[in-house]
Length: 331
Image 1 (cartoon, rainbow, N blue to C red):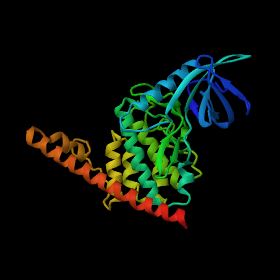
Image 2: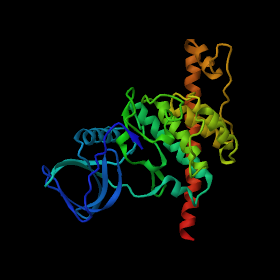
Image 3: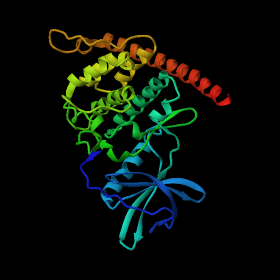
């Protein structure tokens, strides 16, 4: 993992009790859940309930992450990240350590979940992920450190939940935390500016990681290497049109990528990219050529009909696979 912060890890022995200076709440540390550049997350017990506690010596990082969690909780109708509970200080013999408490999300990591399930489940989870990213981007944020390790499947019914919001960055700023394999800057295919297309590139690399579980090293890098890996892999065959577009930065928002993925799973192919004499993608040139009230009205009708069909198809997918899931549990 790469980042712009010094490691602020705090080692808390199992069985220790973290006592809040201001709120007077006590948390019994059960085990470590994970550590990174901005601190360490522990599973803890409070009042017969399990929670996740993140401790760090970097007050600014803790405050920033708390602000992100609060913003995510305000995204209407969505539970994007763990629910924020409280922030406090822990007074120790070596000084005061800030910490915050959040919901403990139980479940399986994305690829562990997929080990015993058909490929269709991967498509359904990608559709949900892209929908959630659209909500996050509309709220003015980019996830940044998007990777399978930060995606947990809870349920039933299965639902993607996000973990570790330490890399979440306001749109327009430099991404503050990333993992090289999923970072377009590492592959020489774009900047680290926080924008929707940065997260979408990471989604493309998650698809690549699904086909190459052990990942792969950077050699020549760039599109040349990724194209070879796409073209030689059977799993990636059906995702090829989408991967070609996302790695060329042709998706400006998550909804467009989600729409292509939905069409792929509904039996259609993702829209092909052809260039006009102006050098612009045909779809973009067509949209720019539309003008007048009649054109706008027609576009609204198409969009409304598309969203309706999208909702129906997703409902059918979820219903069928949830039934299969329940049948598997009873066997």
